[in-house]
Length: 82
Image (cartoon, rainbow, N blue to C red):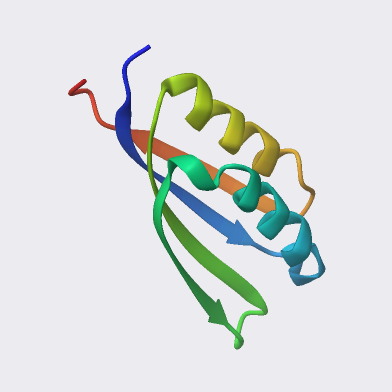
C-alpha cells in the first residue's frame, strides 16, 4: 500500500487518559512525523495535533485505537495525493 500524509486531531476531555493516549502514540511512532499538544486549563481539556505519514490502514488503526478511549474525540484528514 502507498503512504499518505495526514493529520490526526485529538481532543482529550478526560485528562486521566493521558497515559493511555501516550502509549497508543508510542506504538504508532514509526508513522508519526510530529505532534503538538496544548492544555486548555480553563476548559479542563487538551488539544493535540499529530502529523502522520503512513498507509491508510496504519492511520486508521491509530485513529481507531484513540477513538476507543472514553473521553477522547478523534478526527483525521488524509491527503488524496499518493
